[in-house]
Image (cartoon, rainbow, N blue to C red; front, side):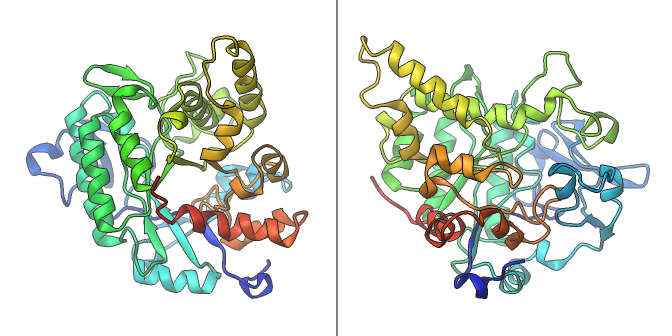
Length: 399
């Protein structure tokens, strides 16, 4: 593994995760709302989350102890060269380390790993909006409280190295604007949301719909980066396979099925809709980073943006080429098993960002394991991908 000393600098990891504390979803949620949000239940001697009054199946053990090893299934995802079953790869567990739960301990771990700074995202938090989407008040109440927990336990800009991303939902645009103002006041450099259509009291809308313009206008004005991060985006397979995000082995990833494409489908639809509906023309300061959503959709996305441009040229629908505008406003963190050279071909080296997904099982065993994937790039491009691009996104760039 290449070290930071060998690189001559420490990378900025755009995709690290915490494991939520036992009270992450309850500490700042009023007791009279917890039944509509998240509660704990003891079932068969084990603790489980009940979300919106229903048992959640996202993970087997939301207490996290013991926990699977970082990168446990990374080889499996890269083609499984050893022919190991995924369940066997997940058998090795360890007691929950303090650096999964504590910002001070995480700083020490970052020093060991040679990481300059990181963006930090939820593990369960990106899964629970979907389970509550038909109860707008529960969604806003839960994530208002969740973000206060995040700031207390991790910080939105802890020691200028750990940048926890508050979770924003557009289900209520007034709430989104208020939460964004709170995040900015606390010193946040990045906020996150799921790549999904927006469920509201008035129906379902595109994230680029004009009703959300007050939020995007403030994002543009403040110059803060918005991350769309993989989670439960509510995608259906229309009966081809059981829907829903689950950790049950029999229903999850043991056999190939089209549900495996849902993460990339969600990001593709979100991003191309923002381009089709001219979000970047209306709000020229918006910067979107797609993280842990993969990148294999890019060839088709650019083909369709080109077709749209050509077909609507007579109507002068676009003021600017939508493909070029997309590359000005969007940054891509590919899966580590994606072809990063293809991503660079479509986006340019200044729009590709390194993220290890550490310490999740599908990420890298250690963050700098990714460096070898960039061997064909010259040092300047490598440094942009590993550090400089995310450094720049981490700066507020007011429009």
